[in-house]
Length: 405
Length: 198
Image 1: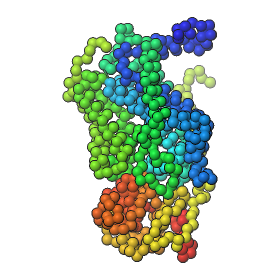
Image 2: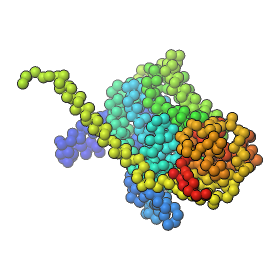
Image 3: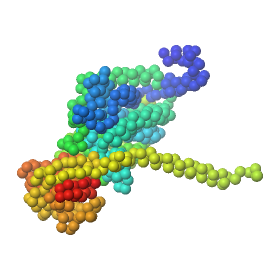
Image 4: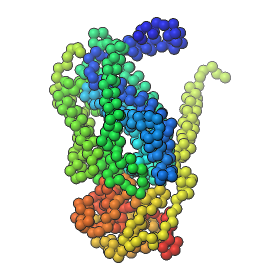
């Protein structure tokens, strides 16, 4: 179909003025991809799909949402009421809001799978270091966007989550207090905070879209890794992206939408994991809910924060746990990419996945001494994983690599 | 005019022009970041008046000041006695590590009470860890509070978020994640019972 379209007169006219044919060929029909990619390679295109869904649903929600903490006649706030109005009165408002709220979680599910695949198959290793680093930037911006967005419904969890996180910045020496005031625009989280978070929540996805463009561009320069981690050469081991992988990605989209739609239509709150129950209580700055936990996708890092007695150390460790991802390509010195041929790394990376899940579980639960200890052990391994990597290749006996894929 | 290029001169001009451009771009950031700081009307609404006589003996009331919660506690003679005898459990018994907003009225004798009138404790109600509002658990020991507090509980506050503990003068207890005592704020008595905070 694409071939046919490229032969039309109209396309020829456009091509003369934009060079569109060369772009389509180099990026799609003649862009070479290893032929042995498995289904773990579907999550990149799914992440792009969810980003588009989030931007689309977000634009429509912004037509009705009002970022104001002013009190209404009903005794609630303008922001809280506008969200309830979207749910009850706006045509299809419930659908668009649930798509957006579930989409936030789906985005992280898909992106965490994508990152996990990169870890397992060594996709972060040279020559894809910068591709990985751009990806980490995307993750950080996503977390920022999710955090800003979570304040908007102005429920109890919104308010107290924002209070806790802005207080984190206050812990930094010298600039902490200033940073906190810049974030809040007042002495506590309040109306000015809500306004600026709405503004930033609109800005960050635009940044994301731009940086995702950079991510894809960087990918198309160094090309996809593959399950064997071998460098592949054009010819026998590669196939063009279009139509082979467009069709495979389209199949992935179908499977993804099945799950996504099930949650949106039948279980949008996902038992309090996707939308926390406390957030249906309007924000009250005089009453802290008994148990504050961030949404599931931020809980692993929240556990790292809680694992330290000292507030400053906790904040530094949480920052370091994310920052260390930037260094990963340079920490791992092994010449072999894929965990398939790295018996020691394979165990390490599986344990790392389990650790992140354990950290997430601890962060979601109310703090008890046992969970705190488990969290501390998991935090230790989280960092140990990265700090051991420079040494693993010295004693690891890698399995023989195949000649070809 | 000579035909040969003076490269040092040209390089200097490049660096000078580029440097000035960078300074100008940096200066242009000031109004934008500045606009994110609290606005004039937010700053103006920074005083709160309150009549402490409306707080019953032994009772705690949460009021608002600058959008922040503030505890006003009417401490009975029994509660005032709980201030003594556990200095070794405290991180900072004399509140020396936090900004001193009470220099005008603080005396060595009322340092442990942290209040102009010992019977009325007025402190910012945000846990110095991450800003949650601590729960008021004034009675000594575990009888009323179960294992949310330690066995030798002197009475005070317990933060539900991350388990920070404060005594009845809102001084933080060792082992809490909170680094500091609950903050005092500037306040003064306009009359016998009328207080202006801020």
